[in-house]
Length: 391
Image 1 (tube, rainbow, N blue to C red):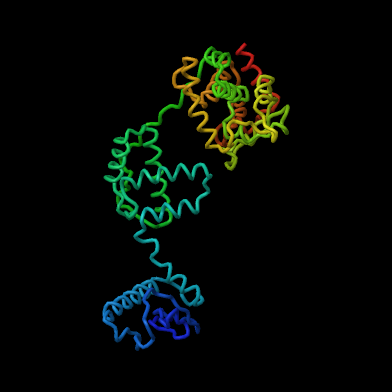
Image 2: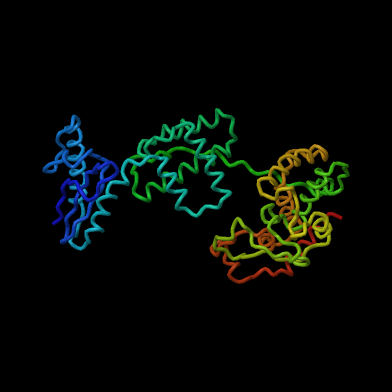
């Protein structure tokens, strides 16, 4: 049986000869201590487990009794404590009840610290979190999130003129946090806050371009260097099978001169059948690569090659490219969408298109993937077919 008492250890005095009140835990022939935040000016202010000779003695004694009661309640809830060492028992007492009355902020911080999240996604989650606390504050308890909170946050985000897809992303992240809290046992709801709430519909991303529109971009003539660079790098993405910017900037073209081989960053840590993308680099792409390749073999988009700078480059110049070509709502992602649509229109099989795009293909998606394997040769032929379609 464990025994709990309030004590002051004269050997553990802190600066100025002051002492902290500790809760002693005697168990299985050992004694360990839980330090409290109660500090006395000297050991003479503590006698027989109580604070004395202080104006605030009554308040401090009440606080000590509450601590003893809290730890005793936690002790009573533990089973088979005889099998625990004294340090293990102290740990159980100190952490008991930590799961109760958690703020949403503490859950967010714990989730961000423990989950496997890519750096770019971390930045995105921080922006979303700021949107959430902008409405509900950072001191709200997770147990106080209700259906009304969800509806209020939805309205708050819409009133800020955010797009439905952005509103959805914000609410989905809040749903992730609450589901994490429920799985960890931090909170329970009689009625789930999201019950009966319909998330905003996902907006379909930018439509693919027609073959003629891609030709119009390819054949654009301009004297503006940044516009030409934007045009070239857009076409390079198309020529390389709709490769994403983050993957394109990571490739060392000093090492990959004839064959493109890469693992798509978006799905590199997820189990999939298409583990990599590989096909011969077409001559159209080689011309652009030679034009913008730096000494280290990587494409030079901006002076500072941080991904954020490259995103900014396209954010600024893609609208200018759209204006110059007369193509509405043109974005960098249109190259990927267009390549895949053109490949599909030419009758190229979906398995080959998935391979070229680096899509994650789960084993359960179709039984066919258990029997077939797309080869780099098939991918090379498919890319050539799409690019010849531009002639």
